Image (cartoon, rainbow, N blue to C red; front, side, top):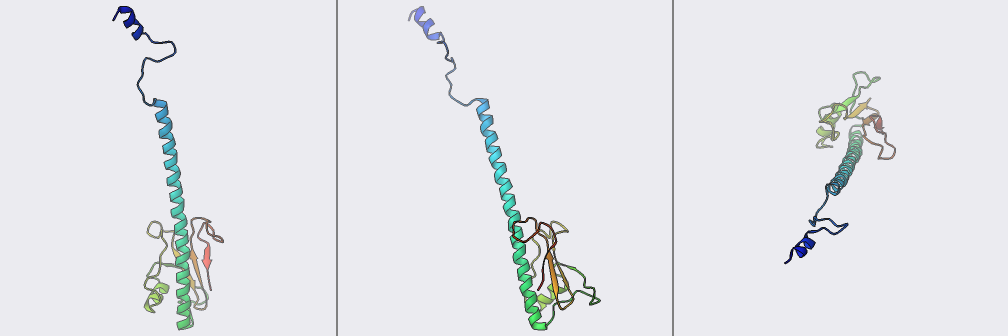
Length: 161
């Protein structure tokens, strides 16, 4: 091989790169990583929203279970478990499994256990509440969203007979 041929091989043609390695540039990798991070963030947010809606749906189911239990109790005793010292001023009690309503429903074998709010262990705010004068009652509960029609995202939701 002559010097002229060697020189021709070593020269870079105009407009072409000498580097012939195949791979991704740093910018391409950063763009892909950013897209993946955005997708992961969207999945996490949507998963969290689904968990919140599921807790709200569970609350409705729990309240309906307590509602049915109270109606069975009323059929057996012609009254609801009362939460008062003075019939004119019933007291609102937190349903925690040791309250008068829970004990009455469990002792009558109407319910094995009275359901508690899904977040009751994590916060002092999320509980089910019960008030009764023996003739009627009010069940109050919290919701985290307005995903269930007719419900508000606070602790003013209630049901009574």
